Image (cartoon, rainbow over all chains, first blue to last red; front, side, top):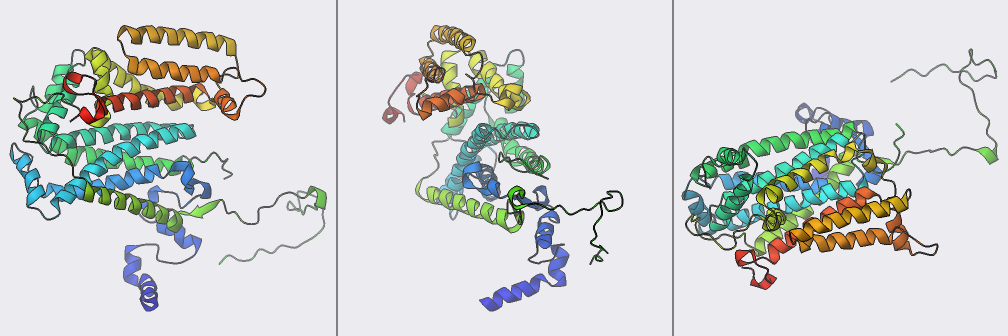
Length: 246
Length: 234
């Protein structure tokens, strides 16, 4: 085992490894900074953070957990797409196939469903936690706005996914929701027609919700999540109530 | 890598010639010197490790839930057969509960739009930035204003018979007033209430009312949106 660790450490010094992870490896703070700064995904974050920001009580890790939910949902969602046809009534038959034919199909759908509920809860909790800490204060005010937008996107993602099983629960939940939309003055009926592709929930609505749920909304969400994380760094790191001295 | 600078230690009082000077500090006035800055940690590996552990715990919990509880799946969608009641997803049931009391344009459009706008503008208003204790200044005028506002809200909510909002609203305002007049030997809780800013009260009111409405919509509404017990909701 120790041998394996040593060999891995050796491998990290090789040209191949260093061609992939530009920074190379090392134990110094410089190398650790570069590991973050030279990585396209990690560079959204700062290379160092206040120790206090890592304490559980400060954030309850709600933002991290929201992102974790988003990642779980992306992976399970892509796997579910392999077994799903956004058409009537095949969509419902696919649910039954997931239940009785696909290996671990029930588990896959369960994990996607419960993660979705968890994400809505966690994002709401994140919003309230940030509010009660007063972490929306300048210079972080626009990141709060992005957070509210992300909450809306989360709700839309959950809502569009709700229709996809095409069972009674899905159909009537979306019917109730889209009827609320029709109450918008003047444009209500037109907005509902735009979203459903018809006057009632039908096959067009299923296809539109599928495209929104699997392509448009996740892309928008990823974009805003990136800006949200980048703004944490730009706005001086997570708010801890301490005065920064640099 | 860098060349060592050629410093020379010398005694001088001309600040233009020797800008770097040594300060002699006596014991009594010695300034606090931080020898090591331990208030910062490296993102890699400290933050990434913690984030990974937190995510794995969440994944484990969700996987366990998924093993023991199945996602609901009812019969094939049938536009001809309306279930009674037809319910929106749980996070919209607070709204659906409001629709029961108010006309659709109020409960379904006006209120949610106002909520979203109110959330967005929070960091742009001084009152939310300063977060001064609500009762610290102009207490008597504020008590009068608060009672007047709540009376108007109470009339409005009574008109539409929205007891589910009226009762928690009155309770929270009562709690706010408890903090208004802390006596010299008031308990810690009362002093805590006294120092809470207005944004705290408004957000807590919103959070509590939204939670109550969602719980009622989820667990206490049956056929025809009539009040039922949770075990009667199917």
